[in-house]
Image (cartoon, rainbow, N blue to C red; front, side, top):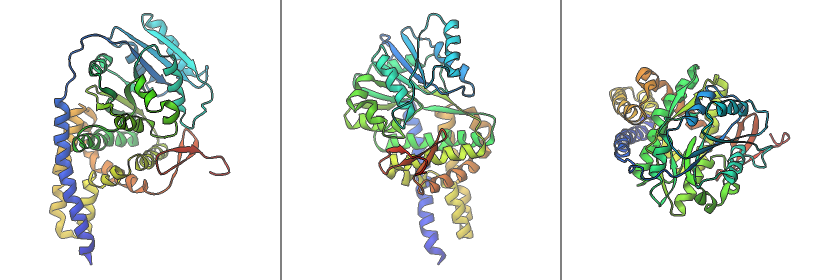
Length: 382
């Protein structure tokens, strides 16, 4: 009877080894692509939704004020005018008088996705066609806008995702999450780019897009119906024939220090959302976590433990190719021994993502629909 479980597990493990090799190839293919030199500096509008004082917010925002690019404006939006993040922006404006800055208090959002409402207001007021939408927890290198503008010299390009290097706060759980992002998550994105012959999705928290492309795919009103508005933005743009890429520009995602309960709720929300945004790809994630599969195989059939142990080699190879080779991540180089723990935890969240359709986001409860749309639950429905 053990063979009933052993054969499927062995097949999944073999597929996981193949996936690890594909991840290494995908990372190398990504690194080969470089944008053409910038010929003319197209003006850029940077849109930044804000919500309170995130950990490290001042340095995150300062990195955009200090962009080494001649033509850009910064737009910031928060729900209330008295949001302390807007006060911080005003202080930075005084330090950098040469940077064009505008701030907005957008009020109560008419959409379940409040971020989309802020982006819609800012896009209406933006002066330029090339938009860079970046979350408040992003820290960018000085040349970020230059790289993005160089890539958008390709007239066919509509949407670009900036891969990010996750940097945790002081909590153990945020460290595990960052390791997962810098190995498994971006490994999956790069592998999808390789297997699908290009990118047909976008991933926040930093996306660049043409204003006209956003308008063509239905605008923010359409995107507001989805929890993963970033993913479907790229999907809809690709369906309309626009180019969608993973940018050559790597940014830093400062994920903060969430305690265990908040971190687990966040990761469960992400899993449930991903399952609905890309159901086939989500099912295929069974191959992206070879260590839990190898452990299960060794438990079911102890004689197979050498094969299970050998799984550490392709997993380490793939993790290094992404975290060090692509993202230049110091965290995984220092804390490599946490990768197996993170893989086990990630596998648990992957399984949990198949169950349940409600999420909690900023203290409010929402229900996810099968196609990725979502709506807020009233108290009596929750």
